[in-house]
Length: 312
Ligand code: PMP
Image (cartoon, rainbow, N blue to C red; front, top):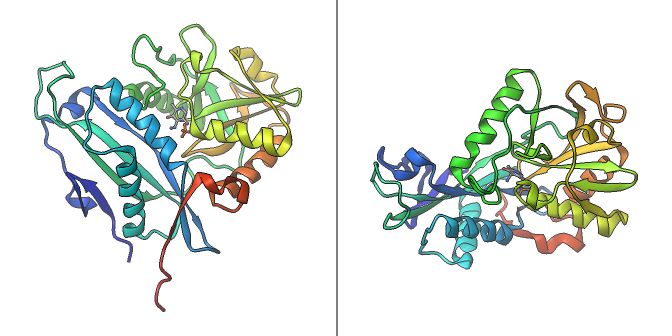
């Protein structure tokens, strides 16, 4: 039987026993940094493939630097702990790994980052689809604007920042949509609440640049590389107007949780024929092979953990 575990305070403990105190600084002020990493199950090989593990921890550590966190772990330690977690948890299905670095000091009425202790935890859970990758998502433009770099930098996964995404996702889903697309404070398209956005236009991919307050997604980078290498399709990183979304040939979202999800409709206007587009489908197929370690050219992106066969 798989064992839900959490690495906290320097050791692996049962997930249900992993707790923090009510005065934890991060709980009150959102002073934490997280990552979302997937371990993709490859049934034929009996491997859990952790996708682009090191890149996730590079982004994680940049966020920690912003919040003046000092973890007692190097990037190699973090990767090693995560590999051990995947092996110990033994999930033979797609799963999601959640590392969190947080201001663990039991101190409230204190808004300084300095002189506050930090802690690190990581756990994993079985996790299938976040959005339906086969159906084309129905999206709306959010009335909530993407927060600007001068407020809380969206280029890091800072816990407090995600209230912005949570408000937009809540509004969209309560209104019957699958996902919200946020504009930045200039009115340009930024991203989804937990995904980057791409348009297919005239045989090219177009996606907003880092300067439009996006999180520079690892899936975004993966798709750009696969599109270029496998299909000879270039990606143009430039500001995108809201009205351009409506006239795109195709549109899709990318993210660790969302994978590569086609968008069929934005603000009640169909994109293309309202179904998954041909380029989106080609990219999605290539992407799914890459993340499960099924394509030699991209195996270096997968840290494969071999799980021992279950005894009959
Ligand atoms: N934007 C936001 C706001 C996100 O939370 C995520 C998910 N991490 C992404 C984009 C996609 O990033 P990635 O592909 O690295 O998961």
